[in-house]
Each structure stands twice: as C-alpha cells, then as structure tokens.
Amino acid sequence: MSGFPIHSLSGLIIDDQPEMCKQLYTMLERIGLRRIAVCHTGDKAIEAMSKSKFDVILCDYDLGRGKDGLQVLEEGKHREIILNTSCFIMITAIQSNDMVIGAIEHQPDAYIIKPITFDDIRLRLERTLNIKDTYYNIFHNIDLKQYNAALSACEQLTKARPKLSLSVLKFKAKIYFKQEQYDKAEAIYTEVLQIRKLPWAFFGLAKAYFFQKKYKQASQILESLIAEHQNYITAYDLLAQIKELQGDKVGAQKALQSAVSYSPRAVRRQTFLSRIATENQDWTAALPAARKSVELGRHSIFKTPENYIHLTASLQPQLYSESLSDRRSASAEILKTMDHFKKDFPEDTTVQVSAYFIESSTHKQMGQEREQEKYLNMATNLMDTHHYELKEEALELISNRLSLTCDPETIQVFIDSELCKNLSTQAKTYIDNKAQEKATKDNQEKIDKYNNKGVEFFERGALAEAIQMFEKATEHATASFSVLLNAMQAHIAYLEQHGKDQTSMSACGDLMNRLNEMPPTDRRQARKKRLEALFNKLEETWST
Image 1 (cartoon, rainbow, N blue to C red):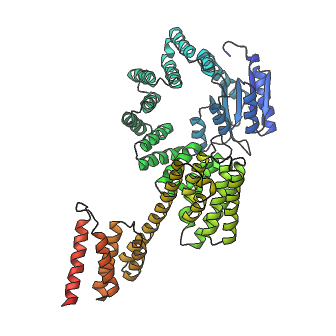
Image 2: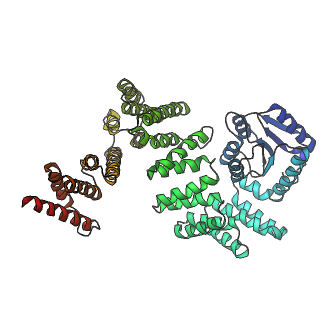
Image 3: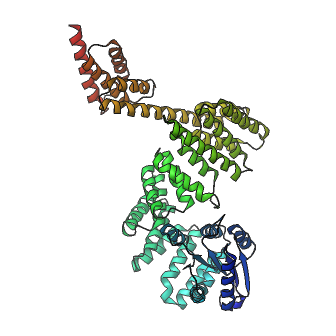
C-alpha cells in the first residue's frame, strides 16, 4: 500500500442490504478503487477474506442472521486474514453503549455512524490510509511475521520522523510480545512512562510483568490503572487472570463482572465469568454469563462446547430446587441447550456422548424414567460404536463435563462402562476423583440447604421444624462443626421450651460425641463448651 495509487487498492463491502451495498460501491468507485467485492453475510465475508487480501474493508455492524460485524472483525483479526496494512471501517446505525464500546474494544481502524455521506467515507478513508501508509513497513513486516525487519522499520521511522517516536515505541513493544521477549517489552513501556503517563503504557507494562510471572507488580499496576480509567476494559480481563492464578477466584469474578458491566458483548469474557462464577458457586452471576456466552458464541470463532456445559451447570441448583415450576423451567432450558449443543458440534463424539448423559440425568431428576433410560442407552451405545475415537483424553473431558452437570448415579454408569474400565490407572483415578468431587459437592450443597433452612426456622422460633432440617443436614458424615452446633442449639432450645424429651436428649448426646473431634484450638470451642454446659445443667435439673 505504501505509495500505491488509490486505484490499485482492493475493497470489500460487507452489508446485508443490497441498496446500501450499491451506495458504498459507488462511493468507493468515486474515491478511485477499481477492484471491489461485495458480501451480504459475515460468513461469506470471512470466506472471501481467507481467499483474497483486501486493502479497504467497509463492514456494517448489523448483518442480519449469522455473524455480526464485530464477529467478522474479531475472527478476521484472530485468523490474521485482516492484515495490519488493511483499513477496516465499521459502519452502523446502532448507537447503544455496549455496542459502541464493543466495537472500540475490537479496534476497527475507523467507525462511522449512519446515515453516511460520500465525504464521510472519503475523509475517514483518507485519514486511515495516511496512517497505514506512514507505518506501512512496520505493519507489512508484522503481517509477514518478519519481526526483526519490523523492528528495523521502527528504527528507520523514528529517525525519519522523531515526532512519531511514542507511537513507534508502542508498535515496537507489541513486536517484542510476538517474539516473547517480555523483558524488552517491559523496558519499552518503562521508557514511555518516563516520558508520559499513558494508560496503554501502564497496561503494556502490566502485561509484560504478567508474562514474566511477576503477578504482584502486574496486579498493582492494573488496580491503579482501573482506579484512574474505569472503562479500560482489558485491564479487568488481565487482572482477573492474575487473581485466578493467585487463587483469588472471588477477586477474579469481581474483576470480570466490572468488565462485563462496561462491555458485555465479548464471548471469551462471558465464558470466563460463567466458569469462574460456577467454580465459586455463585449461580446468580454464573447463569446470565453462561446464557450470554452461548448466545454471543453461536456465530463466533470463540464458540466452544464448554459454553454449553457452563450454562447447564449453572442451571443445576434450579433443577434440584424444591419448587416444581423452577425444576420444570430448568429442565426445559437444559434440554433445549443440549439440542443446540448437539447441532452446533455434530462431528464431535465427546459432545454427543456428554449431551446424552446430561439429558438422561435431567429426565431422571424430573421423574421421567422412560426418557432417562432412553438417553442413557443412547450414550452407552454411542460409546460402544465410537470407542476408537474415545481415547483417554476424550473420556477425561467427558468426565469433567458430567461432574458439573449430572447426578452421581448417572456418572457411575459412565465410570462402569467398558471403555472406562480399560483405561490406564492414572486415567481411571482421574475420572474416579471427578465423580467423588461431584458426590462430595452434591452432599455439601444438601447440607448447606438444610442448615440454612434450619437456621431460618430457628430464628422464627419454629423449633420442631428447625430440628427436622438440622437432622437432615447432620445425617451426612461430612456435616461441619458449625452445623452440628446449630443442631445442638436447636435441641437445647426445644428442651428448654418443652421440658424433658428423650429424642432431643439422645440427639444432643450423639452430637456431643461428634463434636469431641473438634480441635482444641478451634475458635468454635467456646460455643461448644457453652452448649455443653447448658445441656449438662438441664440433665442435672431432671435427674434430681
């Protein structure tokens, strides 16, 4: 493009409206372009760009069904079929805040709001082409992956035009990232910050620290950057990654929720949020993020099977709710999600097997035994007929999915299958551990549910109902000392109110035996001793 006459440049128009395509075509012809292609869908545009290089791309945001303009830009950049030397101009009539921020976040070269005049296109294109021309040697060598040549071009441009030195340093640091020379990128950003305190330089320095595993320094910079520039979206994303690596999953979720509040249209961000919120068992946050990741991902290059799994996992608490309407609603959404899951990944056997097991487990929870058995048979039959595809890695992947979305009995059917029986000891252990994790998690959720209900009844003075709930919670061997103490307190309150009762007295004795396992240094020892003293006092009163 550098120094090339305008008539030698190629153009691509992407718009679902034929009349708009004609207008844009005429405008580009008037500007001087001679080779112009037109695509009416995002998929056709991706196909065209994968076959030919285009210097100028005019893309409407709303392309009707299929990919939208952002997804075209996102995929084009990810697959490197939109070159650094190309001009990508986003056109839209929509001016919603999340769409505008999403467009800016994906960094088109220019952005034009409809209605469009010839001068709008001409001036924006001239400005963009001038920038591309100025940095052409840098961009062209980056496109060719000739990074040393790109660095040389940076040096040459700095000497020729010293006023562009800061911009050139920005490109230079990006090249060092591509070469994985993170210490050199760090040095560049440090140099820039000594000249001017620019947000992109702070973010770049944090990113350089991140890749060098200097998480504390990176985190400090990002938190300061966010405090000064709350809408610097990618800072939240990187901070979330760091928080997760540091074991602070709650902090990671908080960072992602902030990012989503500014820019909700990024598939990978919503996927990350749904996963981390699921791990935190924050279903209020996990469910909308999972729904959004599936919705946005349907036509995105970043669509993955795990988006559908996270959505199904997020619906599990509702599926096991005491409310029949909640269970019906959740089961309907899960089954609909599984239909899309199978249709969107028809050639992936792990998806088909996972879906059948999930469908079987869902029907089981709804008491639909015939459907449960039907899908269970479909799952095991598919495993038998496609055993050659389902190697250890694939079976481990399926076990991961089932551990998030199925009941323990359904998971056990998978574990007992011939394929799983013939696995290596290491793989068997992995899958068994996943099943055990699921069973433990399910038990803990039941304990928490009954304990919380018991506390609610106790606070209302409904002691008999509270005791009933605590009995259900404490029948599990893994009930915590706090739950045991709650149960004992309810029994003592009942004894104080109703007098001697052999059932409650026996229950207190059993609970005290279990509480004797509490370490002497446990902070709950004071409460334990207080309750034991109350119980002993009651026993003494009734024995005299």
